[in-house]
Length: 127
Image 1 (cartoon, rainbow, N blue to C red):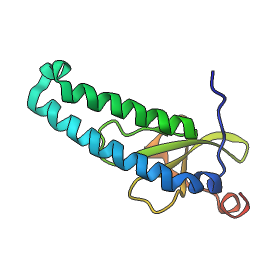
Image 2 (cartoon, rainbow, N blue to C red):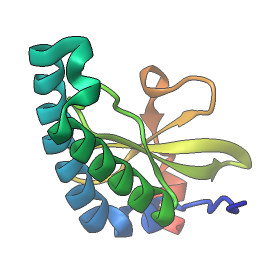
Image 3 (cartoon, one colour):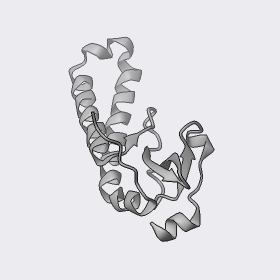
Image 4 (cartoon, rainbow, N blue to C red):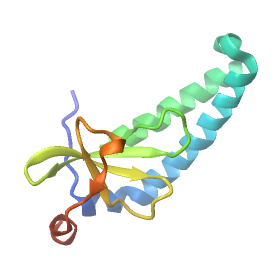
C-alpha cells in the first residue's frame, strides 16, 4: 500500500514540468482513443490500436501516481491533475489544469473542480 504524499503549493509547482509533459501525452492519446471510440463504437474492445493506447494511458496514469498526484479529466479535454495537500490543517487537493501556467487553486475532497478556490496567499509564500 502506497503512503499518501502531501504537497505544499511550492512542491506541486516544482513537479509541473514533468507533470505537464505526461499530461500532454495523456491528452493526445486520450483524444485519439476518443476518436477511435466514436468511429468503432462497441467494437473498439477488439481494436489492436485501442488496446495499445489503453496500455500506454495506464502507464502514464501510473507515472503521475508515482509522483504522488492523480489525473482527473476522463474526457481528455482539459488535463486536470490533483495533488493531495493540507490547507490550514484540512485535507484538500491542489488542482492544476494543463492550460494554467502554475498551480494556484485547490478544492476540498468533496467539492471537486467546481469548488476550486485560490490557494491562500500565506501558503504560497511560506511553502
